Length: 311
Image (cartoon, rainbow, N blue to C red; front, top):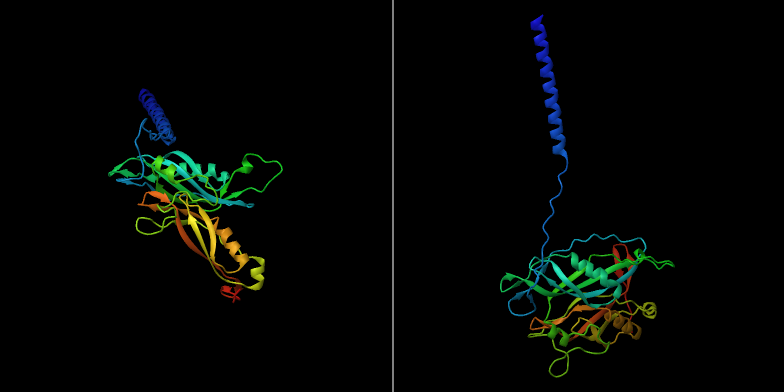
């Protein structure tokens, strides 16, 4: 009887030990499954004092990484398009700082452009082969949507949304003294900011690079020319100033009066990356643009050109 009692006590103790050990394991597993708190990434601190490099010998521009921006076009869209030119300093970590607006086609685009610029990241620029803080000009061509006008407008109703991927152009900024002499943020329509030694715009070639078109508008047909089926090429002369803005737009080869006017109206909305002198200083140059007017009709295999009459 005594042996039986001892054996029963041993079995009971073993059972309690097994249950206690199983409970301990279950608590440990549960604790291991709890998500650990994320470890915050260290912020990239900006030094209290940095030397900012401008366009010149030994300075290499930062390279913009391809932007990845989600586009959600709203159902009701009022287009607000234009170009905004910004200044910024890209630090040695490739982060843009001190962002400011230099020029804007539409003041409504300013906040959006500055917000987009702040989100971008760059491969840092260098000075004499070492990463450094480089002053840049960032030109952003934006296609956005604004909500339709309402009687009661809230702050959310005025927010612009992107309707297409933005297009960015990066240039090293000239030193402030040089920029103030060569650029006018709000140029008058028929003035030229900065010219060659003889008072005329610079000519492309040698140490003067050609301007680069970054935003264009398709010229529309006039009703009278459409009815008369007038097609052809209108040649327009203009000055692209140091801000990349078209100035002194004039027709030098006319097509038809109403189409000439449409060509001028379209080119006045063009925006350019300005020509550069010695690869550094933005300067105005004289250029010509051909505006091609053609009529199309629907065909079995796509649009088909309509035979046009000469004016």
